[in-house]
Image (cartoon, rainbow over all chains, first blue to last red; front, side):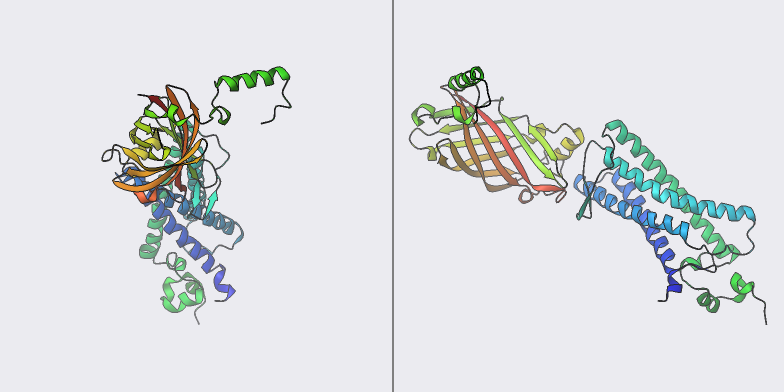
Length: 210
Length: 199
């Protein structure tokens, strides 16, 4: 794999962005599912305890990857938006991406605050491997309840933005027939050029025909 | 024990206290003649059943069982023939955090709905020192019975009552209570002050 396939370019995403994107996406959906099951369904207490610990370990993993993703977003080249988007659509797209990146940080941070303020004082034993210290916050029922509410509200908000993001990707793929979805699945403009009809690829469409 | 740093009056007062036996300390717990201590005792509610489960990163769950009952018999001729019976009611567990108490009572740990008691009855008692003994016996919790061992130290006694400190480390996994390991230690450290009232 050449370094040109790891990094983004103006035409598409590199593997670093793609792997981060799908890893974080899988974690977010798993964490939302775990969170719902362990809080909202009548589950066996021992299993519930385990689910909480899995939720915390996966949540810290999401926080780590989301931190890398946020920094990567700041320093890395962003592929140009598909041709034919108006200014409002472009702004809506980049605003949604920024909100997703910020919520992917805020939700696990709020979860960390729940674990840190909880009067249960259960250590965050990351995959039974290392203890992640609590944040320096006072433990009280009131603080735990507040952060639980914040964590939950932000998580549902994140779910809404994920849904919006998915619908937009599907709209691009099926209605606009551009490469917005496909370029998050594979790297390199050359690959796409050979696998797609020339007319639907803005990189090709932008070129002068011989 | 260093008394050098204390004022003479304090030292004298302290010695008097020791002599009067009004504070429980190993110094006051000179083993009584077996004939004097022998007899049947009921375990009184003034006893304290304290436990600690260490957790990763330090600290742990610390609590007490408020409800228990039991009795013991100190044999007149041979400490080794003494016996003890003890029953603990895990629904009385107190940790200062209701959610932890509810969890301990739930099917995850004690399952108090199906197993309302934890019992111990001794099988052997061995004197290990002038005021210490090792008690082995059968501990039954959650339908599982296993041999466990506790070490006993005499704290205090008089003609009507006797007090012991009893310590033992019990592994919880054999009793089907391994939930939460390794965040929470598999070992429950019991530190009990048992007071017996002569019957």
